[in-house]
Image 1 (cartoon, helix red, strand yellow):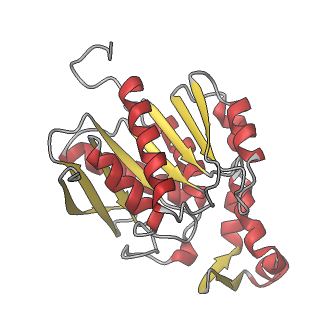
Image 2 (spheres, rainbow, N blue to C red):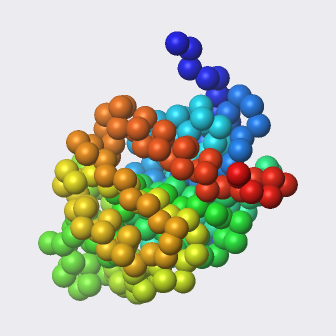
Length: 265
């Protein structure tokens, strides 16, 4: 069986500091029924397997998806050492504005791991967003700091530390720790009135599934939870990414009201 044809376009836009951020826009063969943004995981890039596979498969099912590199990562400009959780959220808002100016305002936000936490914050400032999806997201941004817990003291004492994450060196600064500590997701979820789909694996060894429970309990309805049994944190297996994309596309068709349609009945 032949897979549907999709188009992939480079999509560059500027962040709030005027730096160019590199993105890829996955487009269906026909007119998309929705535009979405995909936020990748902490210190990852738009080309990580989960982001590329889920975005491509959603495009095959009628959703146009923009995935991009956060400031200082991948092919985007900027210095990672100067970024923080606040700048990640601002990058998402810049991406939403850019896609709206060129095509249509995104009606859905997707986020993987810390990217999932970021889209929950960004959704508050994007009125056209109707649906939010998190995959393996921590219930508080500060959770990621456990990845370099043994460096915390030197970061506070010296202002920064060189940290090895997934065999790559990153400069983590004091301002990063201070910024992320100021964000409380669970306190803010009560004020988010968007449809929410939470996806998480009980076998996730990076972000425990208890985080999904916390997000679900704090969020308003409509909200749904899907257990990704057997999947790892990064959705390494194609079958897991495909399953996630199928669920998201089916859910989005029911939730999202396209401009001019009035409702989805």
